[in-house]
Length: 238
Image 1 (cartoon, rainbow, N blue to C red):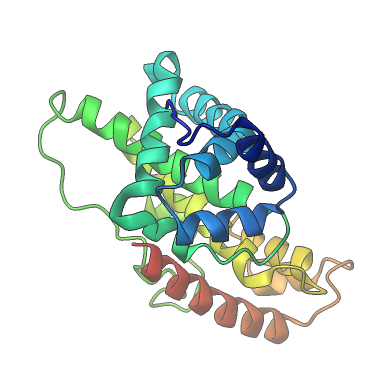
Image 2 (cartoon, rainbow, N blue to C red):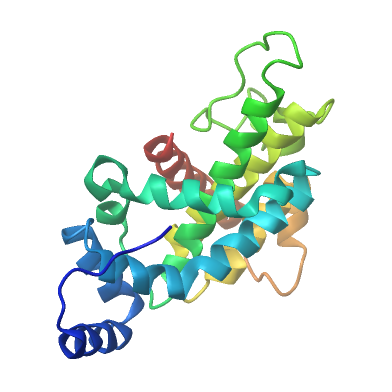
C-alpha cells in the first residue's frame, strides 16, 4: 500500500510523523478509527504491524497447507482493505482492553482473510457442501448432560472440515481471552474449558486434578457460565 503525504512543509510532516510514533497502540487505533483516510496514520500503522500481519498469514497458510503463503503480501493488502472498508468500522469496534490487544485483533482478521482465500480457491474444486455448523450453535451440554468435544462437532474428514475446525477453535480461543482477560483465575478457567471441550474430560475427572482445587459441581457451574459467554461472543462475531 503506497501513500502520498499531502503538503510541502517537510518539517511539519516530520514533526507529525514523530508524534504518531509516540502514540500507544490503542491511541493509534483510536485516532485511525476517527480518521480512517489519514495517510500518515496508516503509514505508522503499517510500519508497526505489517510484519506481524504477514507472519500471521504465513503461519496460517502453513497450518492449513495452503499455497497462499506465496501471496502473503496480497493477503496482507486484503487485511488493510478489511480494516478500511465501511469507513473503518472494524477499527471502531476495536475495544483495546489491554496494551497489546491490537496484535490479537489483527491475528483474528488476518486468519479470517486466509480462510476466505482458501475457500474461494477451492470453491470450484468440490461439490456444494451442506450447511456447516454455525459458530454460535450451542455446544454445552448435549442431551445426556455431557460436554460435547469439539472434535465431535467438526470431524476432520477433509480439508474443508479441518478449516471449519480451525476457525471454531481460533474463534473460541479469542473469545476466552476476551472474556477472561487478566482475571485472577483466567489460566485455570481456560484449562478447565480445554480439558472439558477439547480433551473430553468430565467435570468429575477434572476435579481429581489436585492443582485445580475445585469440586465437580463448581467446575460444571464455571463451565456452563463460561460456555454461555463464549456462545454470545461467537454470535456477535458471526
